[in-house]
Image 1: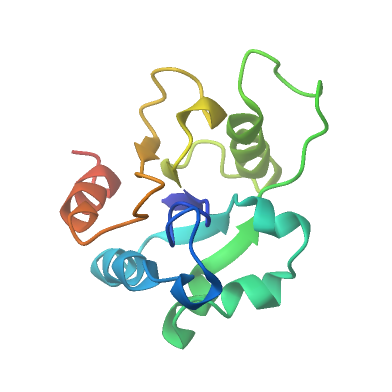
Image 2: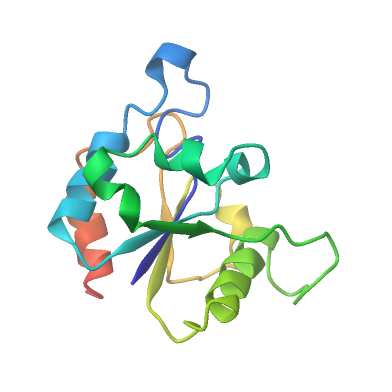
Length: 145
């Protein structure tokens, strides 16, 4: 099971000042502690300008090994154009890592990045990021219920 994770608008409010960045990491960490079989793949645009080491460093030390990669950047107009870009990147990562049949969920604050009706999409309010109210809902979704 994989979580494809956006950062801005998910791990902190989209317009957060530097001192408020990553304020929702503890919410995500709680979900990961409750679901030890889940791995994280970064789908955030941060992957375009931030090293994997730096992205892992925002996670608690005991969860960093569960961050297993980042989605590829697919050029506009490439791949299945029936799908929005981030959705294509998720499927490309799954396929490229030989796990295309694996269960996954995408946590993001922008529904336009995934196809309409994508049941793997978990919407977060960009004004707040993940909140403690999301923990049970995410755990249920990760359990397939």
